[in-house]
Image (cartoon, rainbow, N blue to C red):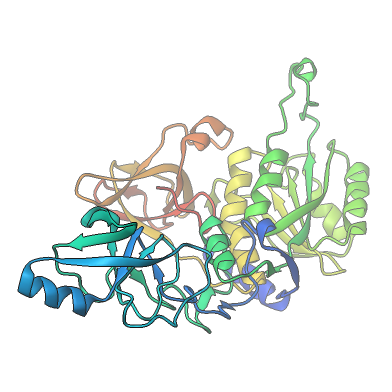
Length: 422
């Protein structure tokens, strides 16, 4: 009988193997296509942003000292507007002292002759003999409404950090400094295989007695995208060793780095995957761990170096395997730092089986006192996807406890590594 190992023992094995297979392949892609990709290196700005002093308002560029001295003596000052500049115009830094005010638009370069911008609504505008004048009745601080050169980015400043998961805000920043191509970590080629006579075809008319729809395959095909993986082979077979071997051969022909399978890893008559892997000369790093759900999980390595995760067939057990085994493995494989769990206050008492690390479907929220709190949801069955769809986090219940009281601080993680849930 296979001896159960603890979750921590299984995790240690996974991380050790990941260290032996560390990957760093990269590719250059257009910035516009980089959403959710993993940045290969720190990106530093090669320019100053802004690249020139520019106006933050529509208004008038003025000399603050001149204005403030006049207001101190006469309570107001009337200035002739002798020029105009708008966004996109070249800088004009050759003005003489006779220029007292220029009309300026938001984003336009501020000539060095001026050191402040007063917004249009804070002046009175008048015309006389075809000339425009403004009257100012308030003190104007030096630098007012001027965006200074380099106050967003300086040359050499980091714009995005290595291993950032690029999102829209990063893409904005990178585009701001003129990045159009970006180096990202290449996606891992993976295969996804589903086993089981019970799996119906796509149409509801195929859902005869004893059949179920295959929810694992769509879930895994979507989930691996969060792990910087690309499913290059997706297949399914009945509970048949020959069919399964054929699928494995097809997957290996695609030069995949990891194979994920669901089903056929427990102790039943048709749970043939451990035998098939051993017959192929695979090294079984572990099979079964003291966890719930997902106890039958298997982790192996095929002779050619392809890694193998054998996940249970129940959907939530398969999901737990991906979150708590595959995710930390792939993070380490790619050189990312280990994920840190969050701490939350438990809202209700929980009773669990002692000796097993338990991963529970849960919902986290911030209460009125700004405390992060978590509720374990009802319907924790490993077949129940309804409560899984209502979850926004996993609750991690330690092995040594059987009862956890409301008010205790407990660890949680979001549904997907690095994903916020508020």
